[in-house]
Amino acid sequence: MGQQPKIRVDRRTIRPNLIAPELYPDKLSLKITLMNLPGAALSTSYWEVEFQVFFVPEKDFGNNLKDIKNAGKERELKPEYFPTRILLATGKFNKHSLATFNERAYMRPGIAFRNKVPPEQQTTFSSLMSFYSVRVFDGKLKKDIYGSDVFIVPPFERDTNDSNGLLPRTDLFLNFFVAEDGSLYRSNTKSASQTTEWNPN
View 1 (cartoon, rainbow, N blue to C red):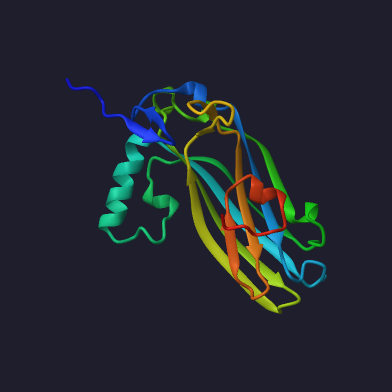
View 2: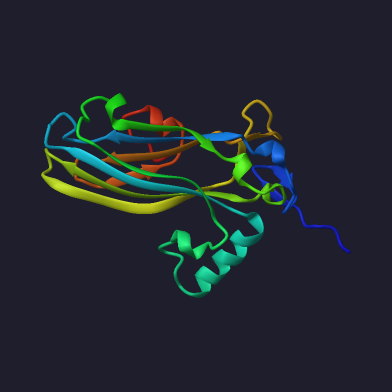
């Protein structure tokens, strides 16, 4: 039997389907932030979000994605396209007080993760998928702004102190920015969750 091929990720070499429970944290936290809204200070403005966070096993994700592309559905991914998905968290909220940055942030701590994933599925290239649907009414612009999509990340993140190191991913971020023209921008980085400025880079 031949050796498994290796894959390069940020200059690191990782074997596909390699069991790595050390990269799976016990719990995850989810932070959803409305970075900016032109009419944030107005009482007529509000923000509604629905979200679902899933784990999808590595061995199934690639096959599912291939089937999705063959069916021409890759532009709009849906949870049901991944039949072996494991639901980690779901929820919805609406906020009517949006004047301050803290008021425009939502936290969901303590999402059980490792114990929900069978040991044989705790591999390096599995996926965490955060589906969302967002609606914002901006009182200044007097318009509804909608968006829905998914962010996909691995269960690990880069160790900033070790160029070859990996750490369990403990935090997920969904960030939204409404521009003065009503355009909706999105990001899933930690840095974007801490600022009111949009920086596409």
